Length: 503
Image (cartoon, rainbow, N blue to C red; front, side, top):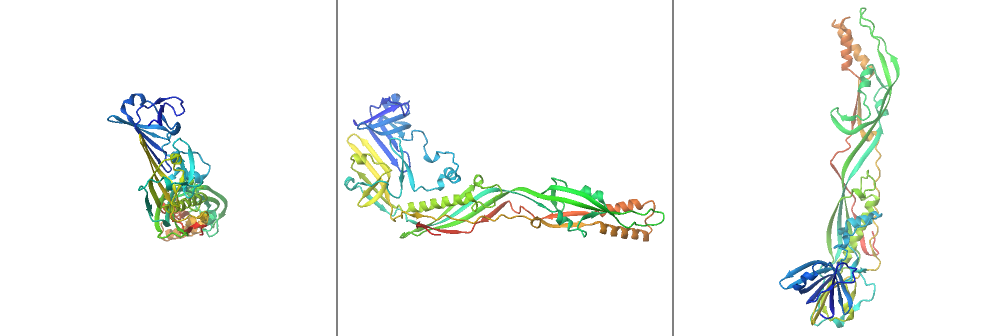
């Protein structure tokens, strides 16, 4: 192990530290898209000297080989194992790195990384650097490894899983829609009166019963609805004298007036409606995929409130943000399908030379004319023994350079403008002035025929009659919120993924 030096330090930027003296062997693991890890085995007698250090630099042949942070220190008898990670900053998982983004789709991707397949990956080198690498094709010529494969170690696994040629994607989203609005019903009320104006012979009772601003409208006079009075006014415009009523000579003539009103009445609504919307997208590959399989993918986006374009939205997948997020997910599914075609795998042990010593998961290799991207490297370094094992994958189906999924365009949901007819089911008017007057005449006539009315009781009898025959206006509204959660389904869509795509 004379060519390996492990220097433990207090900080990753320190130029000084303590060298481990009894290193027995080193195991190093690199995997696609993950931080490399190293386990150093040494004598436990060094525990006291090294236990306080947080970082370690490993040099090999006087060159930096691994730069890492101490994750754990374990003693097993006389052996001490120290695990390092090249994740110097302590991110542990690169997807957990968050940043503020003005782009709504990027924000959604950052907050929901599990929904997105990457066709390119960020690789983390042993020395701490980050580099991007494509998973479909190499940026630079692949490294020839035919002469480096140790005899008898090559294992080839073709068609790990059947390539995916079709995905039936189902998406669901939930949010709370704010329902607000206002409609005038003044004219609708007036049209229920024969003279197209509110009128009565009992004005005080009508005025006292007229709804005021903020009042809730009640269905059939008992159950409160989602509607309330947004604006209210009842103003007497004129008075019309009706023919006086004669009872007998001992009772003064009754003077009856018809009171005619102008009105202004607006009803409004403001409530929250739970929404649940679903959409299905069938994604088909138009590439030549032998024995391709289909896959059902159900994704519940759950609460998408922060991605709703406006509080009153009644459709998520038809909204600007919803369509953008849908397209991003569908594109990711296309990438997922493409990666399923990377189903040829090789495992082998390599004879190390300078090129193999520098291999990382960003690299592509070429073996027997086929190119593979490295997805895993294992190294074991000990006195007299140096083992390098790799796992690499290739595509069984060629992916066209211009592969794409066309943008899905979903027509926006038309805004429904509510009119008084949508809101008001009926307006019932009872005992307008002329009817009251006729009823009063009939009432008095009946009393006279029975000799039940006289100078002493006529006032109380007539007042009692009018109290029971007030002019009443009842507004019957249509229900706005008919269910706790409104469920909507967007029409199914089919798209093609592959050579240019088509829809």
